[in-house]
Length: 550
Image (cartoon, rainbow, N blue to C red; front, side):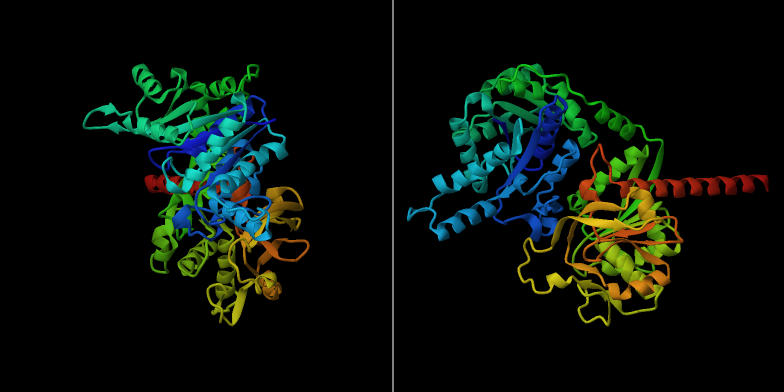
């Protein structure tokens, strides 16, 4: 039977419950345990698929096509495993299931209530993955903060599980804040005390308290927290700010978070953690041998969580290339023919990000033209690929009114069209082309050189596709479809032959990039940017030497 660890949070959001949960899972995995993590979100949306990125950050898509919380990306990147629709549950999904059952008559005329019907469904979902997955340990992160009205049923479900399961099969880790008051020049424990008190009032007593802090916790402070929060002193864990999230597992190892958890779960025999690959990655990350400047062209750049997986993929690919990747955010809505040279001339590579809707698309097209004409390494993802096709149609094929029907449903040149199976769909939630699909790669192409194989699987999230009516004209003028879906013929990858690196993909390679397996497209894109940066340095050095001689 699996053992269960619940991670709750208090005082404020954005403390890093997902990173703490993923770090703990990584340490347990490194000790040989089969571990998974799941996230319970208290919002009433069935999933985050219909949420604006400004509202909730990126929507992370799993192999099986579930639209999930971005924390699942952290889980996969840390553990190097695939999650599924079982790993993310929302209040909306819980209520939808219970209401459907009520309509079917499953409750035999009983009054349907939060307790026991809603909490029973929450408990069923919390325990299901442990029963079906063959895991040793299941970590469950409860979204939001203690005291939120939305999260009360989840906390109540945890209370009931604590009561129902043997004591050694369940524990609660509570993440909280120890703020530093600059005027008083001291760390304050009162917010943590109130947070734990509130959790205890709801019937859940934390076994371990993880304290986010800007300053180191003294022994006296740890003792005070332990005393007032009713935990052992060694169960007060310091989680100070880190230069990168990938340091957190080693910080938690030093604090013995995993060992304390295992002992409380009555697991007394376990091997030392094997973190050689992790430490090697961190060493490369912290000691790069070169630097590249990559432009991220998007329209949600004010909120970095909107492009979380892309930014993490740059970190993975940078470490693989022993290169620091400086990401330069460029708002596509503020980019035009007059300022494109000024904004992009210092870059070593250009990534045009995914997105939905018309806002900022002309700026993306302008940036893509600059990259194509100036031989700047270019990488387009989803909408980025589609806009690369629109740019090529306009400026190479001469179709000045070419566009995507998503932005202009009256365009006479629909280079990007809605997928046929999407045209009759009216509901927006969960109805896009989602999850992993096959892509057959053409040999002797840039894509084949990158992947080293002719059949791959990557994850998707889109309704629109390249219009194959234009494919012959595109290929005659130098843009080829180097990857296609073998069943539907849908164009998955495009590239330009006579260019150092110009590739666009309909899928989202960033969703499968992990510390141990960086996405190949990102690795080779950074490699191409490095080559450009090196050549630029050589040219500048030559010019300086020539000037000195004259």
